[in-house]
Length: 316
Image (tube, rainbow, N blue to C red):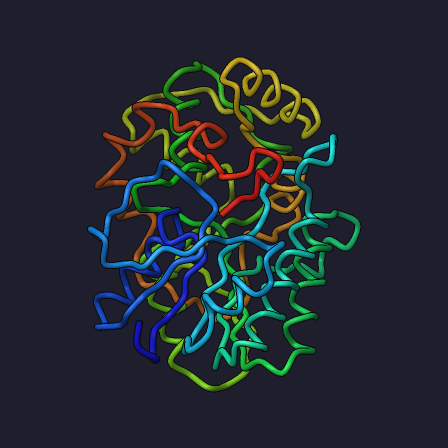
């Protein structure tokens, strides 16, 4: 592969797939690093595939050598109490990736973080995000740190799809607390465009990435229910009770429906920003056009993620 290519972690996943699609549309050559198996290749072999093995430093360096930009979407959504995978493991792995990128002479990194990570210092999910941001800022690498709120759109829109599935299946839907906290979703194609724009920049930057519309969470739920064509009783529920219900549903479905960090982040307003929104696509218009097909089937996040090493269930 000639010099001047771009590397995306998890190009066959959700955000990585859209970044790759945007890069190809701009005439870029793309390589992916992945440890996932069994996922379809939507790019018909146009993306060169290399293993994402954090224990093989020389392999990481060789895979990154000559790259203009590394787009890092790798993270761990879930925390396994048995230690098979956890947020601190993700932090260590990303540091290894950054170190390899420095050694390989990668020109720039576009790294995916999360909105307002400093506002949740006691939660390991957000602690890890802060630690990784600090490591990147302390490195010699040129960087853009992307802090998205919550995604919508695309074929693997797990969170909103499964929310719609629950609304379809049950006559009652509980919101955490009274649902008066903000949520500001952004379409995944907007995220991809902003990310690739930042890959073409040279400025070190930390950027909130949110859509043009901000909702109260309870109004967001009502809009989804209306758009999929059902009438539901929406009631306030104590967060711990809602999490326990989600856990029971998850046991039945053999999946993780929602995590406590996601509930806490949502209720603390971390899924919205006070910065000027960079997204263009309005959630209200998108859900109006797509509600009739949203949530028809449940998307099992855990079962859709398969990896080369079962001891390393790492999320991409």
